Image 1 (tube, rainbow, N blue to C red):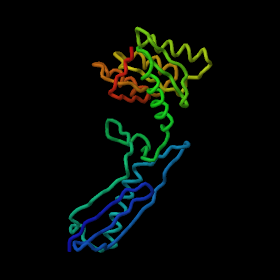
Image 2 (cartoon, one colour):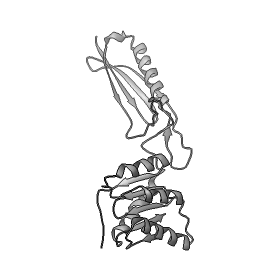
Image 3 (spheres, one colour):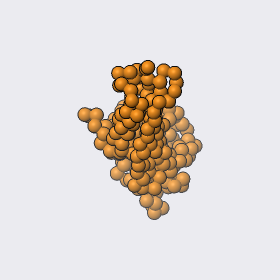
Image 4 (spheres, rainbow, N blue to C red):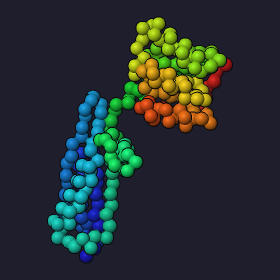
Length: 224
């Protein structure tokens, strides 16, 4: 008799079954593991829990079914929906996985979409700063994108707004990373822009190195 094993790496547990060549379920096993929520809206899991649960349940169904491992002809694995597992250069896990139901950036995404709508209708060169779906300030009609950003920052501060955790939207690409550097130092945590500069990678690298989120839309507004 030949067998196959099915492994479902779920959000709350790993469930494994042993099925014979006639389609009959011979044995089942499951192992639960925790989901960590250190902050409101966060959802994380330890990837080692998944691997340990998979190994444990596979061993369990083989033992329960009293089958020879050599008779198992295949293992099928299904996983959770999208998630993020961060590795170092040695492919070692460096922190808990951020799983599909994590909502920590939900508000940030809404703010970027909100800011992008405003900058779309602003005279180029334009920069918009927003937080909590509220316009903090905009810099518009400047000959330099850096000047537009500096104008927006100055206006936001004059209104008494705190830029920590704000997002920035630009109506066209950044030819250099100078704008994201300035925004980062003022507390901006996320940026939405069209992308398309031959030096985009410099801007992307700065964001990656400094923990800033960046979204490229592929659509320039450039209103004149």
